[in-house]
Image (cartoon, rainbow, N blue to C red; front, side, top):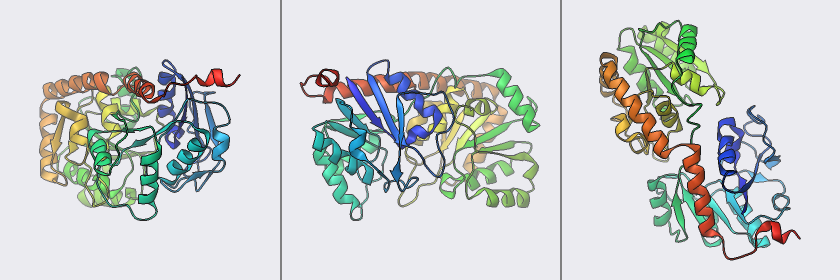
Length: 376
């Protein structure tokens, strides 16, 4: 079986590890935009399976298009995996190109809020629903949204990407090195956040909670428009010396930073048009045996399961109490850390995701000669 995997997410080096896992099951090739948000590939291990291609409107989710969609299908393939929401312009573009060549295709969806799509996105989604062989939803809630919207083709529920459980694992030397860089001793309690620094991620809620915990340090991994406001709020609260901003972290270096933490928090806040769709940073931290705390937004409680602590959205006191409990109980931290890694190994590794994805591919293919045979 030969599959073409089309995804803008492959700009992230850690995500490209999924291709190596899929290659254990199928013949996989991939296409990704040659630029995204003004940047080329995040550096990582070279992979000849990936072919960067020019796009129109790079960096614009749901609006970007490939400059030459037919050229992407120049070589025979059995199936095209379009790693985009069914209402995105690029999905409709690639579905149309696949139909013209008689190639089955599928889409991927994270969207976990049922909402009315404005023109022309509703029409594009309806077209995609009619034309594809199947779809993959990243979570059960996303699958429910697709069904309610009228999608009646085969549908699997599989996370988009897993984690490398060998890289994301407890690492004492990395923990010691990063904490020394932060000026934190082993007795200090370090709370972390990973992701874009935006209001909907609840970063100001986390800062307020930590500011009331004497001696607790806070590490922000990532950057975004809220950084300047967080710096001001930390100074106003008198905790600036305990708040650290690492800035953007390379995806292949994230594990080292996570191992330095005593707890990771994802305090996302639901908005009218968005709620947390997965929370990859949670599974990365869990794989490193770092206890996780999350709000009740979207998929966070379902990703953590019994391996994490759920608090109410926007509730500073509730979050502070949860962190104070972890500070006071090393045994509880150890228990949650072990539960987290066990959960990741069972559900969220690249190998688990790749195996389930390849199996779904096989259910979609009609009886036909393989692509390699059609080349002759």
